[in-house]
Length: 343
Ligand code: ASP
Image (cartoon, rainbow, N blue to C red; front, side):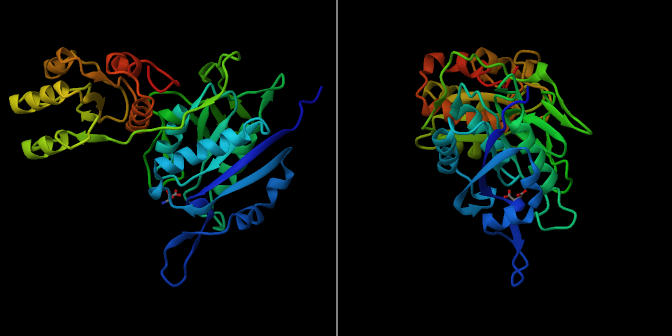
């Protein structure tokens, strides 16, 4: 028996995919979403119903903030029951941040939410937008025994669907703009769509879909580099209102062992500032205690980000602080995979 046709909601937030060149300034700027649909008549040939909704003012993704993330979440919440899947058109620059944030905000998601965009505007002759958009819709429409095949937040770009909260933008030039170094793709597009079922998140059907509404951005990211000064570390850690800090450390979670640095971290911890250790490396993760240079952090009970990306760590931290997770259980919960973001 033929599966019932899917209904997909296309959410347009902005990004290169829907931009045109301003001939006066030469810069790319957002244009009317209805033009986007006119530019791809092929969408009418897809075997699914496509509905659309657009940000009133589409934005370059560099302008994305928590309010925009919550707005995307509430659009999905309002339209959850009446659609089988969602495709979010978004600029590539901060797509990994937004899609990671959505993966945490949307709890017990049982339908696909696929983020995509493009490196070249849709009107460009050599655009990558059409393939990205059409295949994203096809993936969002995939069903098996009446149920969506993908039941998580994904990011589709250049023939691959990744788990969104495992991705990073790695290239500002190539069509292959994203990588997921610590987790394999969920779907690959060739002559056929190859779904790697073993890599998909398995949801518990009994759990009810729930949308979180709060995030807290009182956090900082401190990237280590040889020569980082005491004044900078001090001013970051002593920022009024600071609740947590992501330390971007070397290799498997290593830091310099100078006393002033460790003392500042200890003082911050005493003041209930949460410290998360993630690696600056694109692949692999933190193993505190493997080297002498990370032992002090382990002894201090610093939270391990394991192999989480910077984007997912940022989003998870804002989400957990927004959810008022207690200081006592913060470490255990952060170190646990909530949406397949770490291992
Ligand atoms: N600056 C653009 C944005 O992120 C780039 C893109 O769309 O890929 O909105």
